[in-house]
Length: 298
Image (tube, rainbow, N blue to C red; front, side, top):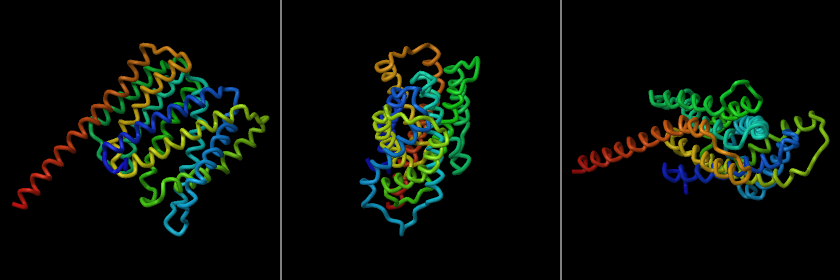
């Protein structure tokens, strides 16, 4: 799975989303009793310890590193991790993740704004439909920190995914991830010690498990979005919605209500249509290119 073709990039992102869901499960199992800052620091230290032996042979500061971009992505990761913990502690797993899946819509919109990828009428309709879906799922009679955290987390997730496109193309994935997460240590440690709460290590095992899953998801994003246009593969992100529904029911005995199903359809169906349309259009263009080359050769 190189990630250099659309099909391999989609498969990578689907696998990544399974591990992202498992990461959320472990965070939710840790419970709201854990400090968000402490738990984030524990996860980050675990990720760095896992990455260090994997990246050791690939450490190369002589080539282009992109340090400023890694620092930016690392600090965005800290903020996103804290918001993820808050939203999962206050919302059911399936509900929180349904909101998270506006991130693919935001990825496509941000790609159009910042990378000049074409924004069609269908993309705008999908964006509007996605936000309507979020409102249906949350039914916000009153705004809670869990709701706000879930929405802002989606924005940060989309931003971080798109920043991958700016990273040096030939940089080793493990080395790049190590730099990103090491860059996040100062801010995370400062927040944990500033909070000045008694330290609890009961959630260390959950932090380690979520760290492994988070790292696998990060690797999947790095590989899945690096070589192909985000509009072609971002729809693979909503595969995780199926995973959260199953795991939410099995692990936390969450029921799936009518509003969640309808809201999820508002988010997923337009994205599925756009993905299918883009793939069909590209296949037609490839066929046309082959015919032209054959005519030229003749």
